[in-house]
Amino acid sequence: MTPEQAAAASKPVVLDLGDAFSRDPVTLRRARLLGISGWAFYIGGRAGALGDVHAETAAAALGFIAPDAVADGWDAAGRVVPPFEVAAASLAECCRWGAQQLGALPGTERLATLVERAVVAADASGMPLFAAWRAMPLPDLSPGARTAAGLRLLREHFTGAYLLAVRAAGMTPLEAVLSGPEGEAGAVACGWSPPYPPIGPLVRRRLWAEAVTNRLAAPAFTALGPADGNELVELLHRTRAHLA
Image (cartoon, rainbow, N blue to C red):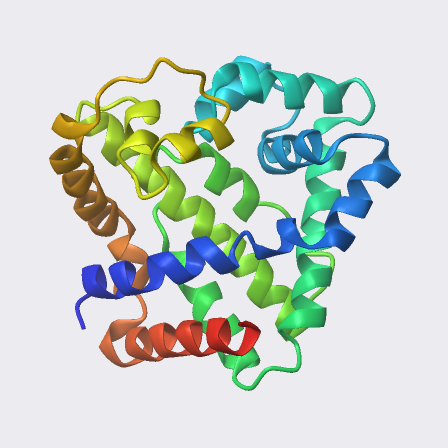
């Protein structure tokens, strides 16, 4: 398995598991305790690692979410809690979920080690969210918490790589969302309002962008080598199967 193949095989699992904590009802309860909505907690929880930036900056870093939708969540959170505190609370929930859901699964400690090696080796050029999150200290160093936090970091790395690839393909973030598997439903979920451009001419560009994403993420998997890269992919799929 080449590094690009390892990236491609890991990506769908990382995108799923790296965000699983945010769908946990306990995580949403943390938002209520902070006095903000679930959407504000999601936006502030992701972009808050950048610090007290303007909503436009947060939207540029997030990329695939409509700027107006980002501004709604960002400003609503900022009126109640400083952005970095929202990010810290989000990271704490991620680690809590990981300790509870992943800690007892077989292979979690090994998965944490492999994911962390990939995260350390990843190139953060042009990926401010990934770089900001990688600099944040973990509040919990148990294997499950480390795995969840590492998967979240890899998710931001893949998302940042895809954003770069989409722009290089001559597509807008909205066009990338529309030509993806969720189509218009995905665009609505990301806060984009119709009318939408036709997606027929975009599919080939999106497939090219997916391939470029794998190439951009490959250095993280190159550091693992073929054997450990294979093991990482196997552990990721096994972990998702256990959770399912």
